[in-house]
Image (cartoon, rainbow, N blue to C red; front, side):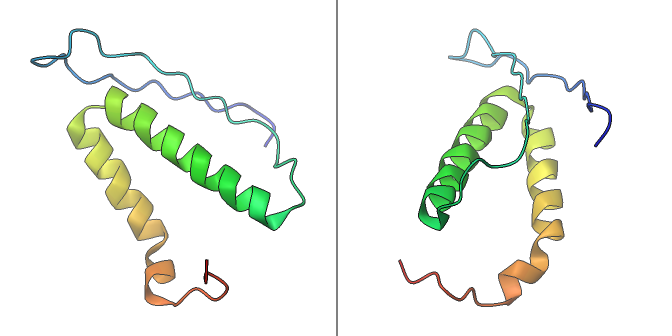
Length: 88
């Protein structure tokens, strides 16, 4: 990719018990520096969890729900095929 993509997304509104909704910056850099499959799986898990937390706490609920729907649509075939090698 030649040019960095920049998206401006609104943060969710403040709610009862939440006085500050954090702004978030997500910087996606070069490819994975890992050759080890187990280390890569753990990295994917950690990054996925961190990214989900940031988006969940920063995005409006409707935007988060729409994102989830679009992500599931893009990976729908994955849900229909059993994954081999996931015996851990």
